[in-house]
Image 1 (tube, rainbow, N blue to C red):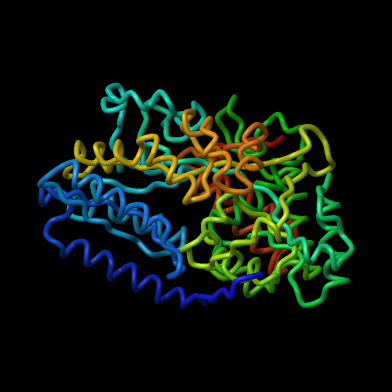
Image 2: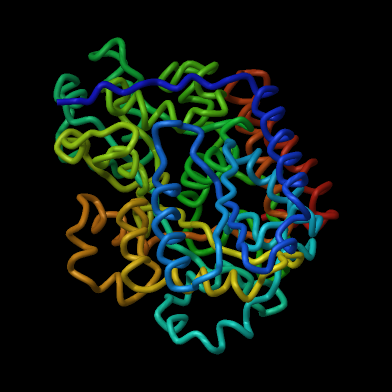
Length: 462
């Protein structure tokens, strides 16, 4: 039985920005920032925009209690930032510029961390890591996610993620599609969506995140899941490591845009006004999927965090009602499947007042027991080898094995300092073809022009 999900309609973007401004004022007014009290640790993190989902809040409250008990006289002040991803990133960068507003510990998306490192906002952690035996348990790819071009490490990963296709078995049955559906090409995905549109009216056939309001979700869950499935799968279609240059929009780039254009031109996706809603992710996992209104969702491994007991949209039977399939490459060429991986890290601001205390808090969060508790609560993929090998982790939640197995064929974003601006350029190109304001050719040319501008013309053509 599907739960009754409460839809949290997004407020106006202006309201969100005003809220951020108020939050910034509150931080400045609280008495001199993180350095004002040597016994108080300030921890900033991204709070869900869905008021009924508080997975991170609950987890950190437990860690705070542990930490304060183990460190008498020390206090932890949690500083949540409630905002969509793109606004969260902006708010964090504003906070990190001054010792008056910089927290002692901050939650950083791996896609943005190199930009903040280059700006001098974060503190290298190597002296701490050299004395922390648990660092040896972290897998190498996760360590690399927070390692800068200077070779130093600036963040501790708290998990990773992979991406694939979620599909509604009941809708598929009504459409005459198989319950063990596994598309082999992009055309197979579009064909299934068209079948749903024809045979099951009243539901959204396919969700592909798109446009600037969705932020990095559009780039990573949407565009890159397509782009990295083009070509031979051996060379990075966004960044050329040999020349250290970004790749102009070639045929694969245009093919990925064409897929997005097709989804929205044929009305296979959500209504454009919904697709370009800043809170589209909340709408998808909080209403469309739980209420049986979406047939196929190109999305991440973390979705079940909203459906667990005590979460905002409890859905105890989701694993019986939803199927999982990997995203195929464009024409079924090797390796046949595509995934993207990212994740978040805990970093210490360069202007933090209590960096030593902050790292002690990281160590508390990242004991094996606490890390495993977080991976399960957050529907994350373990980056600690001892947790990944624990049978209790593997059987903790349906889907964990499916998404963990995708790590073998996953890709990581070229998260160099220019990447956030490159990502925005991708979103602009997607939005252009989604609304129909641009043709694929126009959007690709616009991307190339922006790419040259934001990378100081460090661009090659393949």
